[in-house]
Structures are given as C-alpha cells and as structure tokens.
Length: 170
Image (cartoon, rainbow, N blue to C red):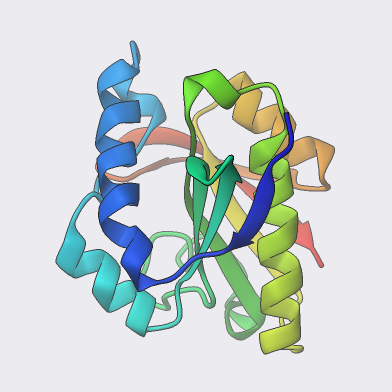
C-alpha cells in the first residue's frame, strides 16, 4: 500500500472527530485512548491556536491522523511534569489514530516524523517533543520508541488514567 502523509487543515476536523469516535468505540480497553478532543469547537480553537493536523491518506481516503500542539500549554497536565525551562521549546503529540485496515504500516511513526519536520521549520527554536501513551498500548509505545522517544515518567493523567510521558530531543 502507498500512503500520502500531508498536513491537514480546518476542513479535516469533522472527519477526524468521526474517526476518533469510531476508534474509541472499537477499543476493548477505553483507558488507552483519550476521547476528549472529539469536540468540533475545541478542535477549531486549538487549530486556530497553532495545532497542526497531519493526515495519512490511502487512495484519497483518511487512513490515520495526528493532532499536534505547536506548544506545551503552560497550564496543561504535561507542563506540570516537565522541566519549566523546556516548556517554551516543546511541542506535544496530542492525539493519533490509525484505522484498523491500515495498521502495521508505521503510519503513526510517519505522521509524527512529518509533524516534527513541519514544526521545526515553522518554529526553529523547538527542541523537545512530548507524547503520552497508556503502558499497555504496546503498539503505540514501541512506535514512539522506534523513532527516538524515551520513557520520561509514569503518571496518572486525564482524570486518573495511567500514562507514560514520552520525550524526544529534536
């Protein structure tokens, strides 16, 4: 299969919300995935505030997506866990999903690498990238490790859900 990885835009938000809800419904363990971003107004606000959308397409159809904050929210959960001096130089891989039919093609890795490249060009001062993953979600955990993310901390986040905070120096 040949995939196209590209930056998305505000017109992709509704399809991404539908995909988030679909993927969440498929999960046996609902704690693996944070569904809080399945809100149109919130995503539009985030997009207008600097969020980058990366999408993986197969024959023009959405195969996967990645939502990336071009900054770390100083009042957010990750900001409370990382060194304060890193916050102005950091981005956050916020939410990713790959449709079941397309899993196994390293799309999460490809989308993250594309996002890192785009954001480094837009903001050359960026030096760190953070992501969170449920410890039992081994596919995503290993995917992050494979492209240079390291386990930074294990914390209860998002209303008491266990997560590894993963960190990469760019």
